[in-house]
Length: 302
Image (tube, rainbow, N blue to C red; front, side):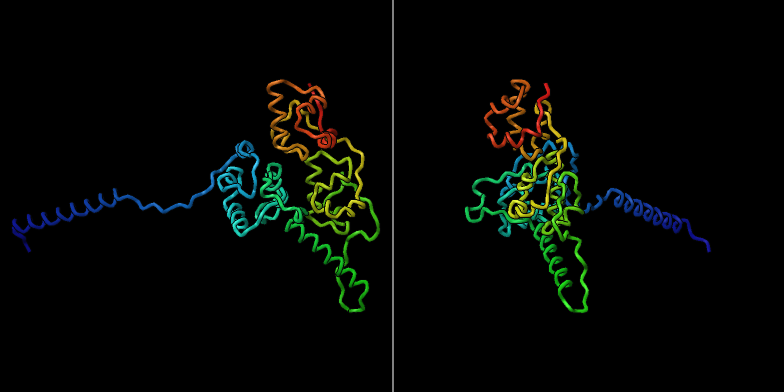
């Protein structure tokens, strides 16, 4: 069937219109802006050096989320902390931050030296006693449960058998300068958290010269009878050089506060090195008692 010339022109015109329409549609789709899915806000990734530079003294009763973020905490850790505080929780001692279950040991160890409790948030006289953290309470409660179960198995005629405790049954002296967690937890009344606290303090100090130093740990201060199981062997204590240690190194020592570390570095910058202990005492920022406990851990290298 032959088409007339007019029919052919009409068909070509229709085909041309179709091609143009398809081209326009493709151009519209090509330049149509792509819908962006909203991305949840994420915490900036900070390096260890940036986190160390951001660390400064803070009161957990008033610190805000922005500050905690700059300290390297993750959003879920901050959320848990703020919810805990919003429910009425108060922090009366630096060690109270151990109650935050999403803060791991590394986080607590990094922040603990910078915790300062403002006087307005300190406990009234009747509440001055510091209680073990939630983790510590659970650990020591487990010790008590284990003791009860062992006692029952030894004095019961029941056919049930309970797991025997690995706790010492007779007085045994444990050296706090060499003992690991497994050995420390064999002492009746000492659980895993207290054992870790002893080892953490030992590492920060550079060794113990006396068991009395353990009274810095709340639980052992409140239960001094546990010290009768412990001894401190004579070792070479690790010292820090007052004249060359950085601010962060000074501040992280358990016997040097934030303000004392700042005072040392400021005077060192403006007046030069310290000659001896008397020169350090001349700053007026250490009491005699503080200097006495600090002396075994410091040196003065010109």
